Structure formats: C-alpha cells, structure tokens
Length: 345
Figure 1: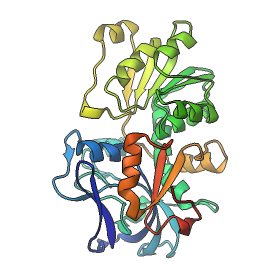
Figure 2: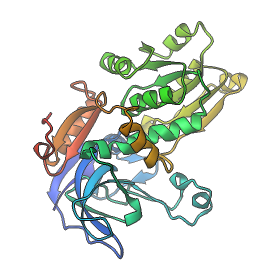
Figure 3: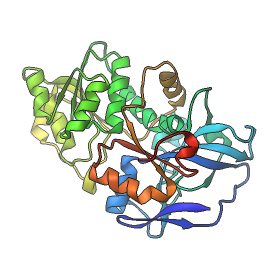
C-alpha cells in the first residue's frame, strides 16, 4: 500500500510500504479521508511535540474516516469515524473517565504509533464510530477536531450569556466558536492576525473580530471577557489570553505553542485570580459531535477549505504551514478526491 511518511522536518514522502496486519480482534480499514491537524504540523515543522519525537520514517494523521474491509461485526463498506485515542482502560485516570489523559495511551499518528495517511489501517472495534445516513468521509473525519472543541467547552463551564473570546481562528478556533454559541455564550469575539480568518469567524457567527488580543479589551471597555478559549500556535498566546480575560475569569488553553514553551506574567495572573485549564485531546464526545452536525448546530463548510489526493500530501502540509491560499483545514483522500465528489485544491 501507499503511505505518506515523515522522514524529517518538511520531508514528507509518499512511499510503498507493507499492508498492515490486523492483530487479534482488530478490523482492517480502508482510509477514506484524513484531516491535517495543527499537531501534525508541529511534527512536520519541528520534528516533535515536546518529547514525542520519531527517529525513523513515520506516518502522521489522526483525524480520519475509513470503510470497514474485514473483521469485527460491522458489514464491509460501513463508513466509520475512528477514535485515534487507544487508552489502556485500566489506569487511575481511565477508571476516572479521563481516557484522554491516559499515560499509557496509543494515539494514532503520534510516535511511535503510525497514523492514517495511508491506504489502510487497523483498529479495534471499540474505536470505530458508525455514522448516520448522510455523513460523508470528510464530515466523519472532522468529528475528531469537533470533539476537541466540545471538550474545551466542557472545561470552560460556560454560563448563560457569558462573554467569550476565541484566540486563533483556525479550524479548532472556528469550531469552538460555534460550540460556544450553543453552550450559551452571550457574545463572542474572535481574534486572529489573518484577515481571511477573521472574515471566516464572522461567517461562523462571531459578534466581533480583532487582529490582536488588545481588541478584546477595547470591545469590553477594559473589563475583559468572562472566558478565553486559546487555540493559537504562538508562545505568546497564553499571555495574550490572560490579558484579555476579566478579573476572576477562566482560560482554557487548547493550542500547542511552537517550541513547546510559553510564559505568563505571574503577577497579572495571580492578581486576577484566574482559573486556567489545559485541554488535551477530547473525552467521550463523539455522540454529541454527531448530534451537533446532524442538527445543523455546527457547520464544517467555513473550515474545510482544501482537498488533496494522498500523492499531494507534501503540498497540503506546505500550504497549511505557510497559511497560503486562504487555507484553514485540508483533507487528504487516499482513494482520490474525485471518488468523493470533491474538487481538487
């Protein structure tokens, strides 16, 4: 089969590799769509996320949908979303319902566990999420980042009519914006330095937009918002979030900073008495993500901007890395864009 393997920083190659062999009880899947995530880009641009570094050619990709080929109880040809988080199920954190924090997790597309930028993968039956009628492969793949957004709003504990700032209007930021509205946000401002992303935030339902976090303070007459949801790659993002939130407010940090470091002004954070939550991946949220899409509460069309064949994976990653051509979210189709009725980017 073919797989897009990362050999080093900015070195992605589509190569022929052996087909995966399902383990006991596993299901063989034909990959249909894979979203390019910001965490994938960290591996592509930095070669690692913190200590998670691969020292050999590695397959990225954890936002994905696939069709059952053989194994399990689902009929062959069934379209499924695949939960990339294979938690151990036995540790203290799994038993407490926090499988996303499992220290023994096998997460697809994070070294040393190969991801889905390939023709075929294997998965356990409990990792497969069958989909309702009308879901296509791209929609199924984007349920994973939507799950990240839902989990972030769970941590935010948003109160009805609370004011919210979204820092970073990439795919996660735009999804959090939509979920925040349905969680009861009274007003939402989206902050992003890129003009085209601010326009998309307005289309997605933001009440106001700004090019920097200073705009949040202007919008609130110096008070700050009740909740800030930070989804940037900037090491300065958490500091800007702390500046934009009100005294006694709440921060949820979702973004992964370039260089794996960030800092706060301790005096400001302390004097404001902030509650700060770090968001990691998602919990058990697929059912809610599916319901939000089914009922039209979340739309993916402002987010899914580009589509590529597997052979064009390097081009897709370069486009995302350079914020070129109005890109927000690229989806890669191993079987080809045309099979899914899409247009090639």
